Figure 1 (cartoon, protein in one colour):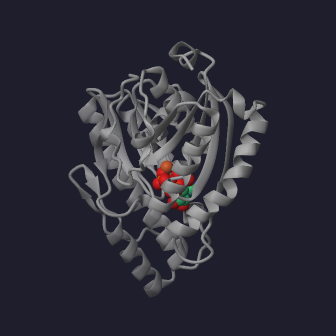
Figure 2 (cartoon, protein in one colour):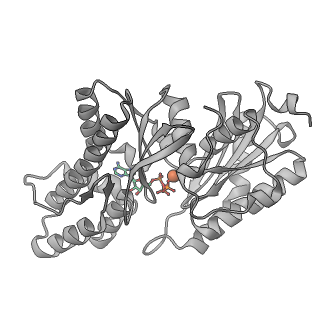
Figure 3 (cartoon, rainbow, N blue to C red):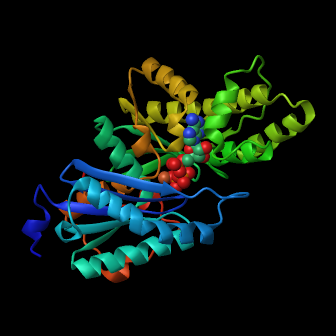
Length: 335
Ligand code: ATP
Ligand code: FE2
């Protein structure tokens, strides 16, 4: 296919996401979202098992793909390019999705692009909220990063040094017998609290740590059994830490927009803290709609399309997965 056809305004990109729990397919045409379909693996016991999640993705991909095509009212032959999440993420999950994406691209004889998952979160956030040049707080089960565009790249201004904030919430929930995912359960219980219990607050320069907080909250639970109070205090402490680092990055970068994304973005208390902080700095506060804040295929297809339109091409050899692919390793040629 000629390059002129590929960078047409109506170019259709199908994106596959599968870095962790979620297998998703998104289809975009130009900047129009045609479909966003996903299924999420919930471990029966304990945390996520990478190989089990990969098997889940392999099982569900067919149905997710069919539903996405149906919703967008197109057939496979109309797809102009395939994008997939090349990393960061869990090895077995990434390899499953990459294999499927390569097979699809070869069968359809269209180009393939491996895209960075975290940058996908930022770009779909810009598309769905209209943010131009935001400072982004990306908070999920696997990631916690403060990101801003600077000299051709998405730079990481702060990040967790151990576990992600969503993982901290999920593990605390599991410890005290609440169902997975823990974030929404903790948010509900926190609303019933009458008391703040002091927990360790861990900000180191621009970076954060959550494992000490997780241990202390669990210990507190075994000592006092005051579950709503501990949920409340856990949220207050973790979210104050996130807000502090975001505020410092905002002052440093001088951006005028704050964008919140990732699964934890659903939390109303976190939104409230960040909104207040943003207002104090005369910055516009934006939250990515939940459907596109969680892991989703649409962010992958949208980023794939942006890359394609700006001349990025990948050979099959270049589609090897990158488990530790960092946000700041991507050349952001489309901005
Ligand atoms: P990633 O691959 O980007 O790390 P993920 O696999 O963790 O993503 P997401 O769907 O982005 O998937 O996020 C899931 C996380 O969001 C879980 O940790 C869950 O507890 C958290 N979460 C969802 N709703 C809420 C809420 N209302 N409050 C706090 N956390 C929430
Ligand atoms: Fe994600």
